[in-house]
Image 1 (cartoon, chains in turn green, brown):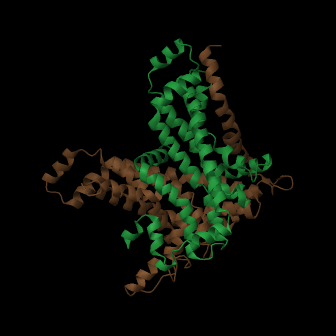
Image 2: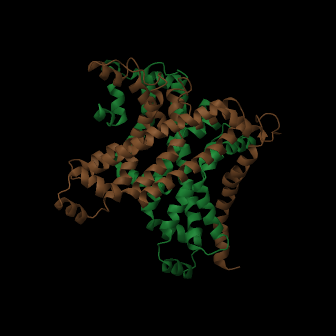
Image 3: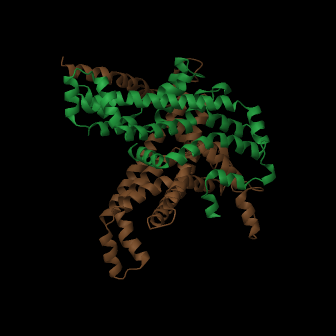
Length: 245
Length: 287
């Protein structure tokens, strides 16, 4: 029994079903009852936008914090460390009231904007950027390159491993997040996949076990496929982020 | 102004603005909300220390605190034991070692909502796999999620299963730094496998254990989606976690001041528990 629980969850799930029941009907029912296609698009859009933002904005910030001497830098470093120490539950409600006051309930902005920067990502990028030799920056400046060009044409190609790590844990964090969407989105058309899945399972919309598991599969299968190809990076990334964050 | 100084401000400014709006402001406003009564529809009203007083007398809140501690008291020790055992097992030359490591880590990358839905089916009283196996070996089925005594332990076991791969990675990293010569020396002394584990591996893995205790405690305090999906906080409110209670107050009752007060209290509780754990472990280390 222990071994069966340690099988990948999708296999545990299938063990629960009487084999004849596995037909495409579960998927058809699920697709018909709730906007899962739309939720898949929403999740992909939100997670992709956040990941790109965290990579681009995070790199710009980390570059300034690692390689540019300016008077605000110590404060920025200290603030980043402080942010990591504050538990998310403390800021959850004030953030929610902020979103309400901005009129962002039921918008993509509510799902995306609070995640545009990520302190863990910035610290990881900063740590990596600190190790790149100063001579590269100096000679690029001699050639008249601006700081952003130095970052994206010299630093980025050297930083692929850390960029991949940041991309994976950011994307997975966003893809799996459910508490925040539950607070700021009520319109089914804007719900992310895990949120719609939760609402669907709770509201009894699923009806049968088969349908509820089928909807879970839509969320899990893309992750499992990506994981199979990139498992080493997944493990490094998520373990690294969890420990540093 | 120097060019570098100017660039630094220019590149750092967006993040500084973001921190002000989405970190500093919420932190300050959380403390303001403690003294407000606000349903988000009418204007916020000053409430003095009503929220704090309500919190102190709120049986449901303290029940949620108690539930969360029940969860932690099962989850944290079980997480250490399972992660340590698996890491030691995986640290030996083993067929398909990479496969096993990857298999144990898979639940870490999967959404907690999905894991909760899958395990609800495993735990189901009549048709769940666990009870069907129990019946097969001649035992009576257990209503895992509907019995007040078993519901929270059942959730704790599930969360431990979901996260074990993450902590295995931490322990595996620690095991790499135990010198082979130590292992060999203690083997020559004639130590049994258990003695080797007890007197060599375990003490040398203390830094990893501290990390596992801290991280699993902090994560455990975030318990939300599992009871939300699996039990709705029941039976008899025995699986109502602190975050679930916070969410209910904000979302169902529209009590922003009170929900924020719960958030502040939770942050203080987390800080206190982690500090106490550190102190206890620090003392154990000195012995």
